[in-house]
Image (tube, rainbow, N blue to C red; front, top):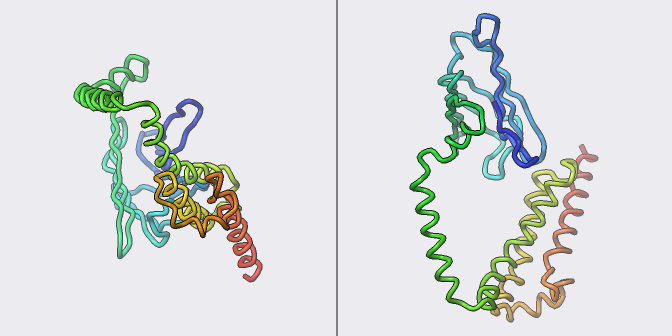
Length: 244
């Protein structure tokens, strides 16, 4: 069980494989966990009477910046075909994250998919359409140059981090470890603050500092620090591996 490909792109945080014998009895369950660094690890469980519903595994791989590595997974498989019910509790002594999914069988056809998309969603569409109309009417009362000026600060804050995140996900895992990932994103965030404040016209007090930052006059003051941090952290990782 996994997520299908959409517009040529797919990412499955978890894929589940059910191994069934000739008598249609569940023999093995495999949880294939992936992260955004293109790494994956499979947790394999042989099913018996004791662990048919619940099974536990020690977390073997970095998955999220919000979750530590020293955790365990508690899987609760309440049902399988045709309707799958699964709960996953990632936890340790200080934190836990509860997730899960519940599926049901539908006719896999164009009409079947369309029916599921629009089923019980009329109210949500009405609310979304109403909010969009209100926002559109309010924004429509302003001049175009005002709308652009209002959007620039948000863009100045968002686009450096977005660009860095895209590039880090493209780079090989060898050079974009979690340690490097966090360091580069943090530096980009810090050095994009002057550009953000400048777009709000309240960054004058930082000019003595930004004067010495290359490309800051082109609103790219974050670029060189991010590159240097990327190189520096990879050099540090390389030296650390050589020491061991």
